[in-house]
Image (cartoon, rainbow, N blue to C red; front, side):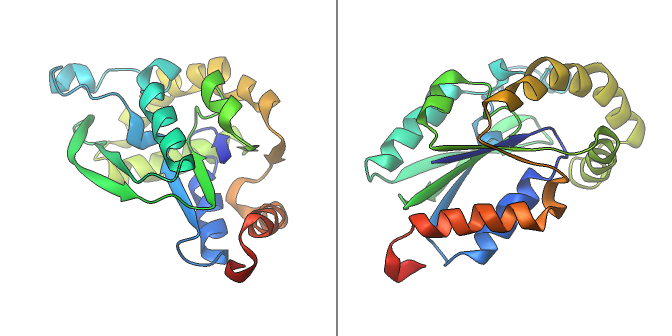
Length: 204
């Protein structure tokens, strides 16, 4: 089990995608932390939009850890899905089959002790704060129907304080730190080669 953490917009998803693209198909299962946001459908949308989604309490860690244990035991899970526009869990689930390697990816992955203790390898993807902000603005405006001002306000009031309080300190738990985010091809290749070495010989 490999955990890949890092600040919002650090390039975690890019790192994971490059790793998966370099490995044989269907040998690695990926569980995004974002799929395990708590279901707040009973709370009015206006209030949901103001909630703090960058603190550990926003994640249903018990469900994520239970799913990881089930995958490790060879069981199939139904992973939840999350809608960032309505800030609520969707009815649809994603079937995830057990694989030789399981990757858990998300900003808070290294903040939860129970999850950390389950991980064999802990990775922190690092990137300059200005670069992360630019990526967040581009992503949230295109994918989450937010205006640049909304993103900047949220970054100042919530993302930056939560990063400094929870995410940056979790870096100390990492076995491997990947600077320059998804652009660090050397670190990504080293990590990919390590994961490939864990796969059955006929699947490498």
